Image (tube, rainbow over all chains, first blue to last red; front, side):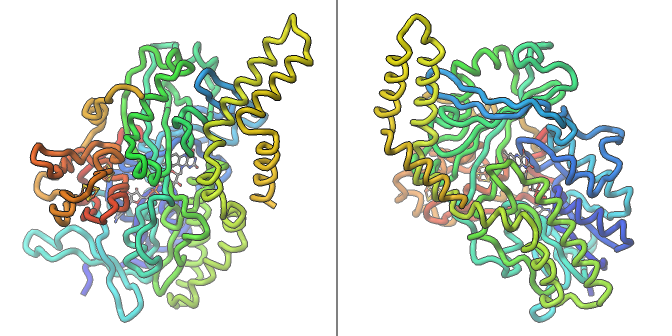
Length: 438
Length: 96
Ligand SMILES: Cc1cc2nc3c(=O)[nH]c(=O)nc-3n(C[C@H](O)[C@H](O)[C@H](O)COP(=O)(O)OP(=O)(O)OC[C@H]3O[C@@H](n4cnc5c(N)ncnc54)[C@H](O)[C@@H]3O)c2cc1C
Ligand code: SF4
Ligand code: SF4
């Protein structure tokens, strides 16, 4: 006999699990969300930027909410391409800053969980799911890492008609459910380290030119990762900065590198040194990003079980999408769960509608579009080393060309390109990028 | 490269609720580590959890683990028994 019983049990209180829970509770379903952290968000870390559109799907009153869970609206967004000597900045001022916000996950997820509670989701924090209950090949509940009671040391069991896995990138239970064959590989994940930095009062506004209610979201490539495939990021929070670097775990293992040394080196690059002058590290942290893509996609459904969010690997690294895809997958799973409840049938056959819907979504189509990206980046690591140098040097010549015959300047620029990559090499690179997407 | 970075200092900015009773990380077979030449765990772990003792064995300070999951798959010999800490224990981000 199990100790408790719910219609749906959700494992994990990140955006995927919370979105799914909220959607189900709104429809009157008895749903329990289990989170191993002391509160939702306590274990979670990202860049990062949250997209309002996805959030509004679960919190329609957003942004008219109190307390406000986000840091700053993103009013300026773009890329820093960093070479050894300097930086080329591509910044775009947004016409619609209400589209996205910077956020800190400990705060954001916690806020969303408060909202979920109000909508009727039962939340059990400080609790880890360690196993499933099975009836034949059907998952019928979960086993917790808590004893039944003071008198009974055996683990608590919770029965559920349906279990939804939103356990994040380390998809241990997804593996246990038999939905994916073995753990992912070091080349399939990016390890990111990040710091939340506090600048002296007023310095952030002055140094980055952001006034109140303005915010910056920048992806950084090149020397920031010491020229290795990966990216850095810089986001403005209300009173702090988020600064991090992410590199494929395989690269770290193969080259025996310390991620925090790369991060520290990035902070000390001449273009950031001034920005971070006098900064205090309020918090350091690390997290994996799932980039196994379509090729490593787990089976999204089984008998009595569905997989959503990072556990399925739903991120788009090129477009910095993750939380929104987590939310959308949570909503799709909730719809499927709801029809299954109506039918009273939780077999894989019924739950397959989740996969059908997923395959119609842009999430799936994007994963297909990006299916060769990872290999492409590993094969073409010069995009992170040679190109930033080439771009910076060429533009240095271009912008200091006064007082010279311009034909010589242009020739010199071509000289740089020829020396660094070769005109034929550049042409080939562009063709290859084209081929990647068409 | 910057001189060696003090990871302990970075980790001291993070809040943990340490589970004194159950270490959630373990080495499967110490002999395998002795034969592992590169010992990448000493480097890729973002929390510096894996340290080398003078005798050449691996010491795990699981108390500082950020629960990223890298060592679950980063050890080339699959020599690490990995799990999350018990519910409520481990890293507890204030910002995240
Ligand atoms: C450095 C970095 C930068 C990023 N930047 C962005 C960005 O700018 N914009 C964006 O949209 N996305 C970004 N992402 C991606 C985004 O963070 C993820 O895609 C998103 O958090 C996935 O949500 P999720 O709910 O699937 O998983 P998670 O947020 O990881 O949540 C999983 C939850 O499950 C809990 N859990 C795990 N196992 C158990 C268990 N056994 N029992 C109980 N609870 C368990 C965990 O504690 C956690 O709370 C970034 C990611 C990283 C690492
Ligand atoms: S990488 Fe694995 S085998 Fe090598 S020393 Fe570390 S734990 Fe041991
Ligand atoms: S999970 Fe991450 S932080 Fe923890 S020991 Fe492994 S590599 Fe280090």
